[in-house]
Image 1 (cartoon, rainbow, N blue to C red):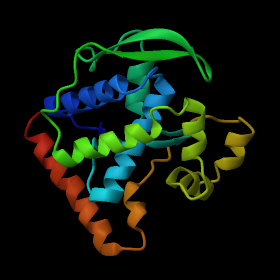
Image 2: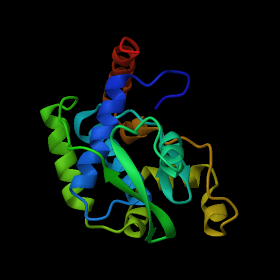
Image 3: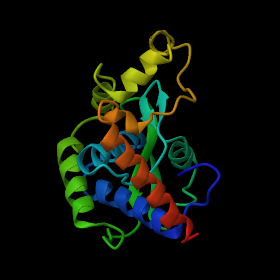
Image 4: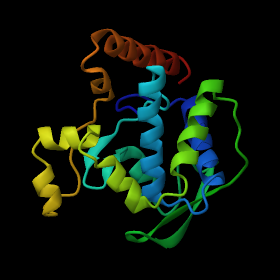
Length: 202
């Protein structure tokens, strides 16, 4: 969900069906857990295939990497752009009252490549049984991009002291390849090609 561009119907469909897939393979899918799994899918796509999966922007928040637009979508009373795919139930999660995500229909793989499906299966099988709290801890590990950007921007102390819980610091996933300029350029080119294709579908 990039700023200053319209989300194409195929992007909405892929995002909606990604969430449906996660929900179908997770006993109780809460907002925090979903946001973390989506980040892990995106990061893993960059690491494994050198290309974006959903091309969402993720920011350094106290709870870990967060897509602002998706956080807002999941914090509404009802979904808006994802209203054809999911609905919400209020429930008690690891961090108090939260939102449980329920699929409205069955998963469709129309927008997914074979490698996309394999990656989703891998990440969901690895993390579906984890709690939202444990996923926050996982994304906070010192080797993680979240930690590196939070440390670089001087956010760790403020997060620890609960002075702030959000920031405008975006996680640059190309930093995965900061020591490999060739792969970094390949990833940035893949992002540009992705956005060009999606802009033609607006």
